[in-house]
Image (cartoon, rainbow, N blue to C red; front, top):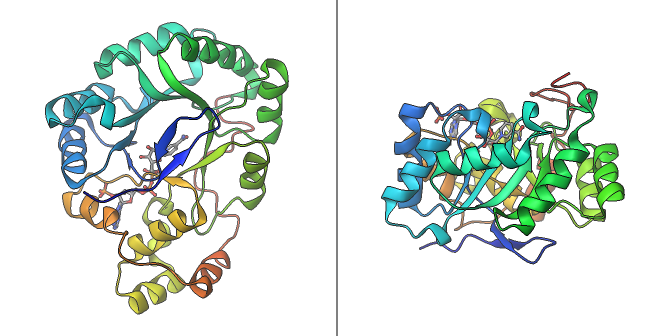
Length: 273
Ligand SMILES: NC(=O)c1ccc[n+]([C@@H]2O[C@H](COP(=O)([O-])OP(=O)(O)OC[C@H]3O[C@@H](n4cnc5c(N)ncnc54)[C@H](OP(=O)(O)O)[C@@H]3O)[C@@H](O)[C@H]2O)c1
């Protein structure tokens, strides 16, 4: 079995640096995708209540024969449940068929409803009750992070943000780092868009790997936590086959130069308003 690197969170728990994302994996595709990933060696699955596939993720884990404690499982609190997090997590746990998740995240801050600090207080209680081993946030900008830290004294373990070669997020990553928050990246392949980039294609050719493998290896070497989504068995295998090569310092620098403001998802300052 390949040794995926583990990252230690600020609460002392560890997380596999690589996993499978299941946003837009339809329920009927999701069981097979997660089952295949677990067979290939993935031990980290990233889902969310809003993805509508928690039940299938739980089913695949239960049927896989891989012990529950060997799978790092993340789910997220949706925007309309900020004032109702304990019930929302109970519902997620029931759908997943587990008694706790390894990581529970506030999915978006939704500043207009001004309830994310309340949600964070609930997540702290849920962590203390053992329903979530670690807790964190997603799509939080600096002002959102500072508010939860200042008002509760508890620093999120992770901040899951959009980041890929054409939208790298140096500033927010630095802010996360300054607070001891690990950065998880979503849409790591730019939803497929960044796979067509000339520099990525050129590096792929020179190292004898695919564009997706080059981008995923770059994420691993820059130290972020990454979980590409695929429901295609061959791609699930391809994305996991990144442990036998390294990008040189020069290639890492070439990748850095691809950065521009190519945001693909919503802006957290206004999303959910
Ligand atoms: N916190 C948030 O707000 C948030 C937002 C978005 C995503 N996420 C998380 O991040 C995960 C990943 O992000 P994402 O799903 O947006 O995008 P992504 O992983 O960058 O890209 C997924 C797309 O790329 C395709 N793909 C995967 N591997 C490939 C390969 N080797 N070659 C060619 N195409 C490939 C997939 O197609 P097939 O599936 O058809 O193979 C799918 O269309 C999500 O699943 C979710 O867990 C979180």
